[in-house]
Length: 426
Image 1 (tube, rainbow, N blue to C red):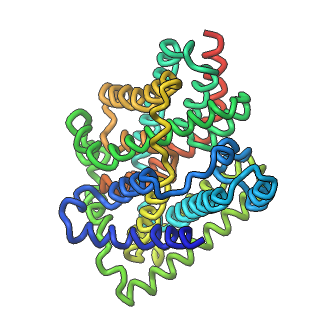
Image 2 (image 1 turned 60 degrees about the horizontal axis):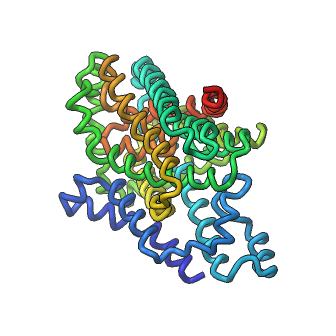
């Protein structure tokens, strides 16, 4: 219990220190608060201080609902039966806490990040967003098929893995779980695919949040150089301050930010209520759609839109989210040689689709920032969009990313199952 409390305090207080360090250290400032938090989280999760649980506990995860922890009463029952050991209680408790924090932080953050956006300006970006989405999905399908033709015979349930990878890199983990259930994937293959995805995606995320913009600007048109963006130059200039947290704690700003936070919590509550009207399978998508819609509607209210530092407050929650999610990645499993082909297939899907996407963006003249945010939305899902948008200092593309990610959620299950059966027939 003491370790859990200390870890909880670490998750919420370390981001404050990270924010402070970005203002006093040029190197950390250049790296960015999000990337620093993500790197720190990976270190925390892989230096041996985090309880991993026994082999028995790990064999039961993920749970049938896709979560990375078991219900507390089930753990207690298994402990009494002798199936689990005492250390599993702490490990499961921490996993439950990590899941809760990451889920809650991102839901509260999204409205705060949207309050200061200009919806009318974003509408001008919609055609480019759709183009980038089509390029991204096409890139993924091409790479999945080629990767399967090369490695499929050496991978247990290879065609099912291809379907899962299509789903997870179109819509996210919810699609991965759904497709695994639909195709009746064995637990071992599912767990390894999910773990390889988490480990490799961590490196992709670090790339996207650090040097991706500078690298791709050498190849693709700059966001601010394209004709459709010249009318919104002021907005692009405004994004240069998205990581400026100074002045947030003055009494004037605290009062107004408290109001913004309260509005965000209300939006989350309403969205949860709306989701109850739908089946459990689509509730996550409904919640995100509702939060995004209500956040956008709130941004049209001048008194809400004019509250200063709402974006920065949202970014604090994003930093907490990044720290937590990164600490959940386990790097050790990557070295299991018997699953080398599976690892390579996931690596090809992750990195190959990005390379092909950038190549197609070059051919069809899609700009750097839209390409980066679409890769983020498809590879990681909408919750990661604000973090990457802040890292490349362009909050104007948050809606583009969220929109593309939500479309990915919607089509991910269909596309994943479809591609799986295409691969099976090859």
